[in-house]
Amino acid sequence: MLSRMTRGAFILLEGGDRTGKSTQCRRLVEYLQGAGVAAQHRRFPGRYRTTTIGKMIDAYLAGSTQLDDRAIHLLFSANRWEAVADMKAALQKGITLVVDRYAYSGVAFSAAKVSGLSLHWCKQPDIGLLRPDLVCWLDMPVDAATQRGAFGQERYERVDLQRRVREYFAQLREPDWLVLDATQSVETVHEAIAQHAVDVIAVCQHQPLREDLWQKEEEDNRVHEQC
Image (cartoon, rainbow, N blue to C red):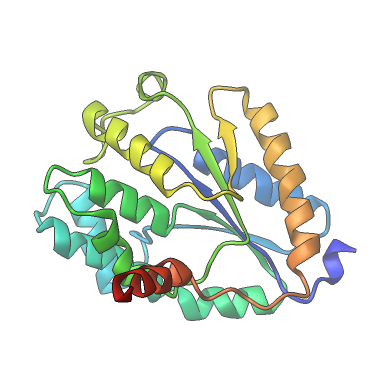
């Protein structure tokens, strides 16, 4: 049944650094493909792509260049927008996209910096992006994440920043998110994600793509301001 879907599902894994997102993305793609579902693994930022934006982001994250916090936030957003057409084409062909990080990470990390960018400001460039059909938040205490291999090698892998990032994810959390304790075993987390992914794929296959990320919230804010 799943292999005859009209469109694919947009399944997103979010969370702080070293919470197991990449591992779970790979496992989910392998599971879905084994079940006869066309699935691809993608990640943001697309720092290794052959685009100017991707190269600039990679240099920044590696610590070899410096950019104003607002400038890098807008670059991260542009990196997502430049992928929209390709993502839509894949989804409309019936390919399920399993994505590692997206706009929620972009907002949480930018807001967590000491420059004090607000959540409202950080959301603005991404309003109207594709909205995921399922968001899985892999949550774990930062102290536990620091015990995982290679923590601290990237620009954002600092304990104080990661704690603020976790707090902002909690503020960004929406009612339909699947929240997972990432300190559990890899297999336990995978089974929970796989079960929900299969359900979402079946439900959304005949529904249109949702291209309204944060639009309703923005409209509600405008109405409130007018009142």
